[in-house]
Image (cartoon, rainbow over all chains, first blue to last red):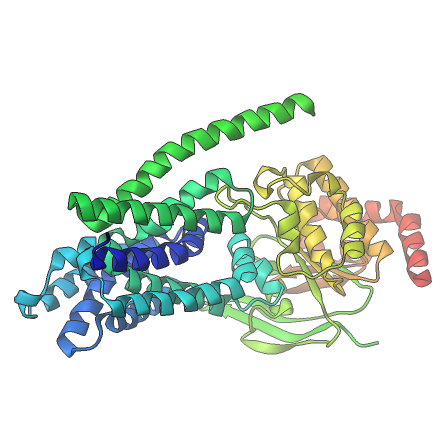
Length: 274
Length: 246
């Protein structure tokens, strides 16, 4: 019933949604959406370098994004410029340089549109290995550092006083983001990766009461969005990334008002009885 | 008796400006030291150096092996975007047993708010939660950085009473940065007056008479401190008495 490529895309998408959920929570809590966006922009340069050197483009992306992320953290640390200015410069510089480098690559084989907005037709078996291999690393490290990360998010110095090596944990979080960005490009595309991190997490926030529940909720919402989007993309022939993000947005628009209303009524009821 | 933290002649420079100059201080068991000083006097930097967050550019800080720090920050901005209850916040990374947790919850009077989200707490409640968390690991030293700065006057008063009670009833040392000298006067054993360098150090009454203190804070403050200390002396005495029995 499924074409092979749809099945591959669904498996790949499921893997991405599962890791994007918990990681997306930290993006929302720590206000890293713009950071993620910049990271994704730099991925284009990684793809270009991968194509030129003949390296696997996933590997090229991870390397370039990691270098970019470390550079960014360092520039932030020495405070050359305000963070948003810095991100604005680096993101667009990386995107532009990536485009320029790409123009030297043989045009026949390259579909820029697929990289920018994702294309289920491009998902290979190798990509699935990458997603699940990378996903496993990300999930393992996230769970291992979960309490430290949550505490750091609430108060960095408090975490430090309790012995958390905040510098390294920060670095781990950023590197995890680079992995997710790199493996998600085939499905969602460079320009839309951050929305897969932020929209499900922001939606889940409205009906949960613990950080862990928010992570699980975001994963489930992400799964629904990815499945809905890939179906739409396969049968209506719409671009994959935008279809997924559209479904995620519909979930957001439907769930948030309903959840807010329920929360409001619950708090009213509590007020009456206390 | 070994000291918990010993700082010897530490200096810190930042962007060509000296933040701390040749500061030496020791914190021993049973100490209650309050650090005072004008804005930009390097109070927070001194705390960071003593806690080991920051390596001073000159001098050295040694910590004893039985040092366990409980840290209470100035404030916690509980963001609405993180859904986390007081209970879960207390459980993050700590491994305290039921009894200890129960005792601390009672001591800091946060039993009623355990199931509430952090984001809806009032300033006073949040500070008590932070204090509870700092106590969970059974620290030997409690470090507080202007813990009552964002509370109203009643909140400040009851918060300092609570600190005083904890100091009296537990075998714990306290190092606190505070501007509310008139409120902590009765509890603190020593005052360290900082303005980049140590201006004066000693018991509240002697510090109040120190010329350096008077230049820094003015006659009025000095008078107020001296009178406060005198007034509360019997109380102070009884707290020492209690300590010997523990």
